[in-house]
Amino acid sequence: MSEKSTVCHLTSAHSDGDIRIFRKLAISSAEKYKTYCIIPNAKSRLEENVHVIGFQSSPRSRLMRMIRTVNIVLDEAIKVQADIYHLHDPELLRIVKKLKHQTGAKIIFDSHEDVPKQILDKYWIPKPFRKIISKIYAINERRSCKHVDGIISVTPIICKRFSKYHENVEMIANFPSFANIEMENVVRKTNHICYVGGLYQSRGIKEIIEAIDECDVVLHLAGSFDSKEFELNLKSLPAWNKVIFHGQVEQSKVRTILAECSIGIVTLHPTPSYLEAYPIKMFEYMNAGLAVLSSDFPIYRELIGNISCCQFVDPLNPREIASVLNEMLKNPTHLTEMGKRAKNAAEKKFNWNSEKEKLHKFYHKLLNE
Image (spheres, rainbow, N blue to C red):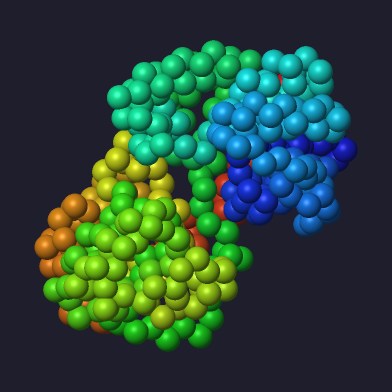
């Protein structure tokens, strides 16, 4: 491996400072390679040894972003003349052939989600068209990926799908970085529970609020609503008076919330994309030493079912959620032990350090093929 090898991360749809792209992958690649990160609407700068190349792009629609912004990303990427280009958005697959022709570089496609299944959940796509759009995308993805040198994704299920038509697939899970959520001198309130993340109907927020009507708890909610209608709907529920709504908060405030609570909530609905995805918040709760209440999905049981740090529930059943919550809260000592086991598992297994080493090895392999 040459110390002068250059890695360039490309995104057209993610924002500046994205946790996976910038805080994890780009900063990690900068430990061993000269690293660039091309990001729309970012300030060009050198940060954490990453050369950020920003440009202005305010498309009026998703379609314009997929055309104009992607074209700018391509132009900036060619200027870098990197040894490896690491692509982070499905819409960038259309530039693979031209980028490879202009630079001769190795190209990686990083699929952060199972996009064909995610399309089935897109509220902005009319429901009658979702299946056909999903199928069309899957066909185009398969064709485009024949021209990349490697594929990275975040779960075994997604990697297995890619492995059917590409021989060079690596799983690099989106486990949390300890630096983001490390905590000291934690004093918890047993009956305080929390949900941190996007406040969407599919995240099971309504069912949780309905459930706590039967529990002696305080629910901390941190995040932003995806619609005013959903926000008003939740605030009209009888148990809203048991909710402390923090809104969108900085990471330092997230740490404060996690330090105060004893249970972290991950009761996502059984949508096609959630059923096969690793819930990042689950690992953040665990690393913060919280017990977990989660949806009863096979992938979750496979991950942490043998750790005794989590209780599983039907996320669509508020009465069952309430019953399990009350059982968990009955025994504060047991709850504390669950949190300790959760943190121990996070430190030993579900952390970014192990994934970072896999990233370095994957780059090294590509550069030496």
